Length: 346
Ligand code: F6P
Image (tube, rainbow, N blue to C red; front, side, top):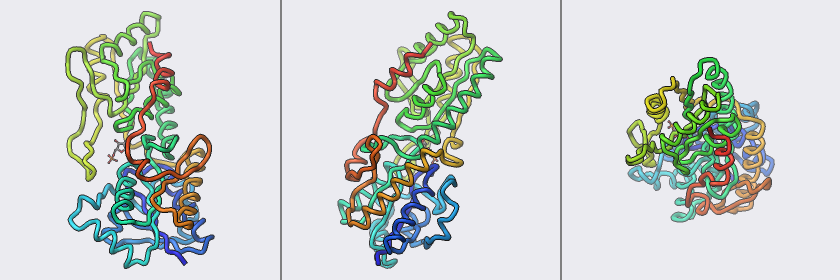
């Protein structure tokens, strides 16, 4: 009988519990035991567990967050961290690990596998949808739904007051949430890191709308958009401080952008920062299904002893890819998709 560990690392997102349920269910059906590891890699450093059985996974499919808890712990940055992870696996009698995470958590998994032959299988999660080697990550669809609903709501109030509404969405260094929710919500300008547009060009689009008799505008900006004004260097707006993976805390570009739009156009402008609302709450049906399919595949990979692999979506088929390949680079918004959004600017 195999003992399978599961952990969730990095930022939480809707659908994590659906994966935990699927991995547990399939592993139990295959005669394995399942142990949840608390709070990401931190739980393997400290040896903190939650045994998982039918009772623990009952009713968790629609629940947001993660019943295991999560942290942004990086064992490679902790003194003796990797040795402790390896020792905990052995002491707890774990034969395999399913790591559910984004580029950071899976980057640790890939390194552990390459450098220590660690028996790990990955499941891709992140609202940012920026993981290479999978067409979609779960959590993204829910975040896009939240952002789209917000844009719809902001439309009616923008129209009543003849205002420009700036909506700041998450996404870190890619603009997936901004572009997809912006297209779905009919945004008039969308600013993302991958396809930079200057503030002046954004204002020209807004003026063009006004000239056509539309006295309000919706501007969607991704938190990772580097503020670009003509004749100046592009600059990130950040909150300062680095996490264990060396990422800056983003957030706040919406406020700076709104002030610039108001100054350059003279139109009254307001800001909404959606923040963690995009990560909370119940997953959409699509995310629940994707998370469930990923979870089943991950459990099967473990059972077959295919380590160093990650469940992935190609088209509408679940496949598996190498963890190293999946974490080698970020998946950015292609120009073709941005052009779809741009067709409706101004
Ligand atoms: O990676 C997911 C994400 O929500 C990013 O979009 C965002 O920049 C970051 O996490 C926020 O992290 P935290 O929850 O640590 O503030």
